[in-house]
Length: 178
Image (tube, rainbow, N blue to C red; front, side):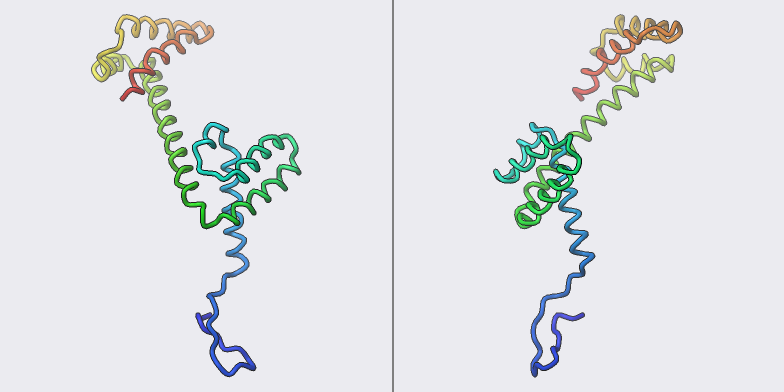
């Protein structure tokens, strides 16, 4: 369909906006509901960082209270979706702040995985200790070697992983400060 359309019984061309399909409207509605669900899933501290108006804040707080009431929460999520549609022009700052929160969480997760990888590598490979010391010279070498030894003994004897956790806590500040 074009931007202009001829109507029967009318002798002139009328300007009409481009037609938006019902499916497209539904896709946009579901995307806004998904954004609302993502806002509900955030912790109150993370939500406080977002530029939300009072009505939306109140709706998100009520969603927290309805968490155990499945049908009420479903209906409330639709209400949040409607609030999001009403604020469609004002959503860009919220989406930008949400993207920053997502990236922060992903960066923290990547660093955490890096610490886990180093811990597993220290326990599995003999030359990993020298590589770790070369990369992180501030480590207490004696304590590092002792925790590795104790951790291997715990694994052999199938004991609780006390030294395994301590090894993680020893290397975590060294790796995360990078």
